[in-house]
Amino acid sequence: MSKLTRRDFIQLMGAGTLLTSPLVHAVSPTRKLGVALLGLGGYSSGLLAPALQSTQHCELRGIITGSPEKVPQWQKKYAIPDKNVYSYDTMADIANNPDIDVIYIVTPTSTHKEFAVKAANTGKHVWCEKPMAMDEAECQAIIDACRKNNVMLSIGYRMQHEPNTRRLAGYAATSPYGPISGLESYAGYGGNGLPQDNWRMQKAMGGGALYDMGVYAINGARFVTRREPVAVTGEMFIDHPAFKEVDNTTLFTMDFGDGLVADCGTSVVKPFNYLKTTCENGSYQLKPMQSYSGVEATTSDGRHFPAIKGMQQTLQMDNDALAILGRGPALVSAEEGVQDIRIVNAIFKAAETGKTVTL
Image 1 (cartoon, rainbow, N blue to C red):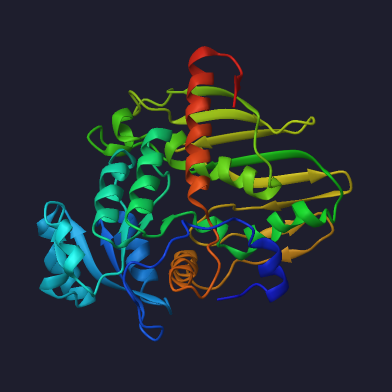
Image 2: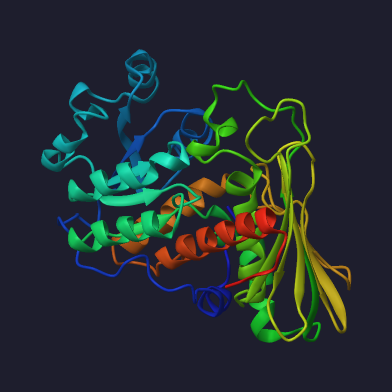
């Protein structure tokens, strides 16, 4: 897997801490951290579990699931012992299991707050998939629980660990193409929806394009500019026949002040996937900007940075493990998750009212 130089790493690392607090239990510096995946859906089975086979500082040691029929397959594939298998009802018992150091929550967005709080209460460190939760209050409840239990919290922003994304984010400080004058940030994929009983099609569960893919567009724009929006607009579309109550596409703008307005969009039926930054003396872009298969960067003066070899999730989890072990910086703060949800809900309000919403 390609690596940033030490100079790049120091320059780009300024994302704050996960939650700085003492470790709950001592971990041998020579032992990998044990990770338990909570939720065994497609992202866990297709990406996180495979990525954990290549990590250097953490490894898959346990599972927590509400689907007991999945357990035998996972145990056979990953040699997970019975003592490291839990249901949602028994997960509190992980507090007494020294094999598990981290609980990674990979369930529908509407369940993140409940499970993250329960995970923190076991005294284990918490990794939570994006989006962090449904609203700011839920995000704060997660943060409060982690602080109360002296555990570290990380939100699964794999893109902030991805080297090409970090490289272009560094340009905000060095301005190699002059001041930023324009920005486009679009994250989506082509599709035709899912069955109505799938959580991604249900408003109350956190379904829809803005919660799912919109966070990439929002976080990407914030990350590469290193600026925060002061206002947003939004237009939401439920115009695909498979969609009944959640947006299949949302277009929005983020006003960063001083004349910089980002044009953004997200969709689960339209395959757009790029982030382009225009400056006074050139431009640079990520295209694709959030693909699992790789993120590529190009610049207007002909430079090309190919996708890394290996899985982005491997890099993400190793970096987060090193932060827990005190052997590396925490690249993504909990506030990143809160701020994106703050903006998501402002865009919802803007779309509903047809008015600009000030942040």
